[in-house]
Image (cartoon, rainbow, N blue to C red; front, side):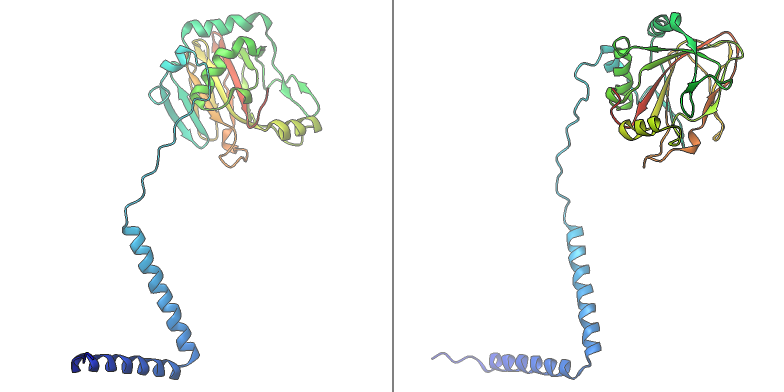
Length: 278
């Protein structure tokens, strides 16, 4: 039989005695004190685990591959760099200016497509569209099959799907003609048809305006609530959001077109919906 040294035996006895004394001390304490002690121990344990996890290196995350939304992007789209050629004009509302978005030849191509079909512009009324003095321009809708190339380009720089875009709308402003400040989003109390359209296809999320010619004087796009004025320049594209990020209408997105003083102004507008439009 193996006999352990006296020092080892005494150590075991002393440990057992200490544990027994600790248990007796806990029994003599009140239930409230034991409850507080348990909570304190839990907090210390949680902090220890949290600090231990925080000190460990973060796991490597596989990068998410970027998927092209468009199968066939025209070469001019691929050569356009929105990060280099875009200026942020405002964050409330969100307004962005795209420089050299269209070439002079492309601008003239759009003008030629619709200039012979211009009619007096209207606005959406309570029960039907109507002509008002606040909007004195002339406009023409351009069929999707003729605007596919610019729709794809707008989609490429805004990252919004072509399917959510309304038809391209050409507008001409002669001297004294204007569009007083207004919103592009729709009130929900206009009519049952308008309400149904908003539910099924969404509000106008954003507006993309492209300036097609140089205006001698006047014709600036204004955002009166933020004191922002944008002078028309051929080939530049102006993107602004009509809705806030959470989907509510943005009251700061009030905008308009100042009267043309000299010359004429051609622009083309693309309204982009929240949901699929066509």
